[in-house]
Length: 334
Image 1 (cartoon, rainbow, N blue to C red):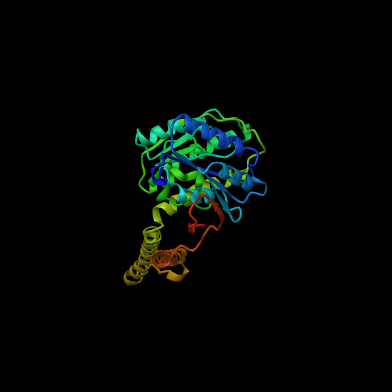
Image 2 (image 1 turned 90 degrees about the horizontal axis):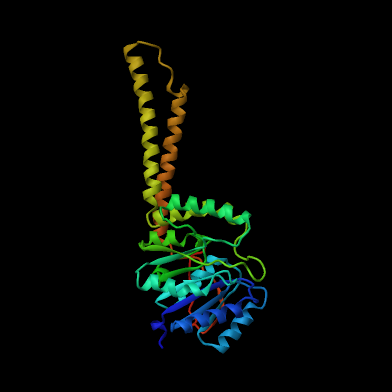
């Protein structure tokens, strides 16, 4: 069957998961065969230091539907996902973690929601989690904040088990640590049919978590602010910086104008001794706001020039591919 006619592409980012990969591969193959899906499995090795790549090579040698991408070094989960998205051929793209905590048995229902229910994106919701309380409570707080800030009514933004219509993954870039906010990125790109499905969450069987850690709870709100700004103003920075620049400039101008008018009236009518304009605090405050306004406006102008003239400047380096045409992957790494 031609690759473009595949039902499903499964993209799996991984880091040091040599123990779980064989079991996960068998599980995926069983589910796919039971449901008569045509499929491919793209395993993206994000700089593993164990024998994960050797395991992927063996899986690919035994079954051509299993493919591998080896990153030149550890770039992070977002880079691994974005690289896998570029090569995914299935009508529906499913992502899952490699640690066996995401169940491949959920794939048929996720596929149906994309194909039959016409969702652009379906995110898993691990309603019952097998994680320590030190992880579950911050996760709940993070998800509540993201729901409020983004307006997307999902319970579990960071669930690795998601399904996408192919056009979604081909029209978004996931960079930095923005994999947590793929629904936000997709919505900003015009894919607004976003659904949710309760999925089974299994306790980790091997090793410990590789992607994440306590830092994500510190970086999470900053990432959300960043992605909100970038998705709204990346192509039109003048709309943000220019608007604030004009506001501050006018505010400062009005303050300075009032001081000059007050000084003129006091001198002209002689009703009081006019205090020198330069001796009044409002003068320096007005001067400061005018300077800030000019600087913000210039920042917006320079941002517009950069958007128009600068090509993408960052690339993830792929060291090796198995079963995939070798094409250069160029994505943002800001």
